[in-house]
Length: 375
Ligand SMILES: Nc1ncnc2c1ncn2[C@@H]1O[C@H](COP(=O)(O)OP(=O)(O)O)[C@@H](O)[C@H]1O
Ligand SMILES: [Mg+2]
Image (cartoon, rainbow, N blue to C red):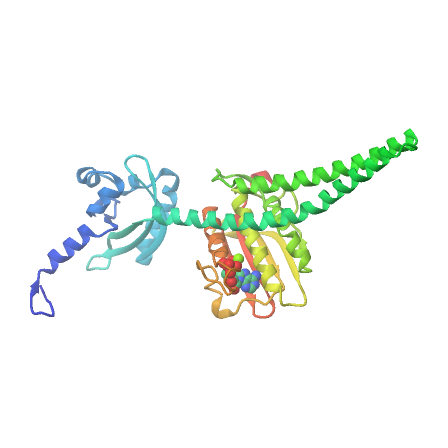
């Protein structure tokens, strides 16, 4: 029993029972063998099992087979460390895979030996939808940027076509032009028109491919492609800002499994941020390189994007990946680029980190699992 401030007594056991039962997240507990020994009402709602069915289940049935190994490792870890917070997937009765955030504590007996886990699981489906919307919003902004660049770049070949056809018209109209000369001129102008048309086709194809942007299955992606596409999209801005770009990433060497458009979006934002950061600096260099590194036994491509810009002050370095954090003026920055980049990379089992010294530039490191079989 506890006594409330107004002097009334409350039955704590009943209070906690009600709290657990009606808690808006799923709460469950499993014993050493993984048998479910407690679950609240939300567990049944989330997973679609009846109480009888859940009571008879081993916890392993609540996870999809493809992540079982990670689940078992996590279970061993939580027993050692006493608590753990991870993102995972539940498998509902109807086969739906539900993204969840799990916060687990271990309960021990009087001798300090493990007795059971206690987990609060939050359904992340709404959150993931919102995240997908944010990625989409980022794409729209990138399409705007690309469209502006494409329109600008279309001008040169377009002018060439207009000029070449006008001069060709004049040559044709001149009655005294000898046929040989006419043929020679005509073929030279046709070549110019053809080349210009091919350049324009290339530009519009890129714009079309990028704007499609529908959610795609993860496919084989050559890192060279999204990096080069992003550099292409920003080429105009880089030229206008006198930025010297060096990129040592070569074709057909760095393979990953992923969504080319989304990876491109990550690099697009990193390069755009680098351009912004160098706007007030004299030396303007953007260097992109890739090598490998290992993390927990797995091999990753480690792609470094280094700029010689103003750098990121130490005190905001852990804030830049948060949604809506921006130091740019209204209308220029949304503060979404890096948070979107981080969620895209997490979806690709990769990550992003930074190192920076104020006034000396910034390096972002993007890590993505290698597909070494193909190299
Ligand atoms: N290369 C960089 N150099 C300096 N600051 C950077 C760099 N990249 C990102 N930042 C900082 O991180 C913030 C968040 O970046 P981002 O999420 O892309 O949003 P936005 O570009 O819209 O501001 C930026 O406003 C800037 O302060
Ligand atoms: Mg940005």
